[in-house]
Image 1 (tube, rainbow, N blue to C red):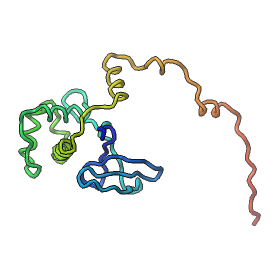
Image 2: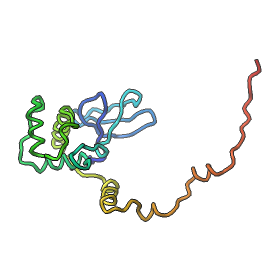
Image 3: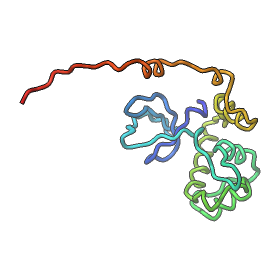
Image 4: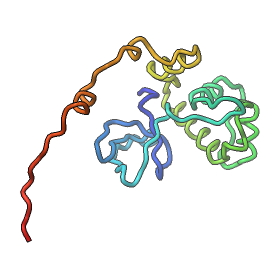
Length: 173
């Protein structure tokens, strides 16, 4: 299982592997009990762990950075039921976190998620496309060589084409 397939689903606790996505939802597998089910996007929202950012006193950082700091820390994971322990844990492990904007419930989720990821032996790393984006932004390059070339897409060619008039039959009253 890969880190880039992990999602959090609103209204459901824990982490899930996105097995397949459909127009009206997705099929997910729980990392805790390994059950697979369909989750409708009418009721729930999906958040890829790779896309979650954490507020810091400087620039926002990806959740991956915080999880790696937790992994490299010698501190023991706090009890998820003790809010004061969780906050003091993150003050030691990731002191740059903006504790006024990161809620206690968010820190509690990070501890739970980290525990689930460790139990499932998932390597915490961004996918190559995300690391390239971060690297290009830090260097100051906003465009890659492929993005620098103007690309003509089907949508662009359709946009410039004259509109077709469609005659639809109308019901007379």
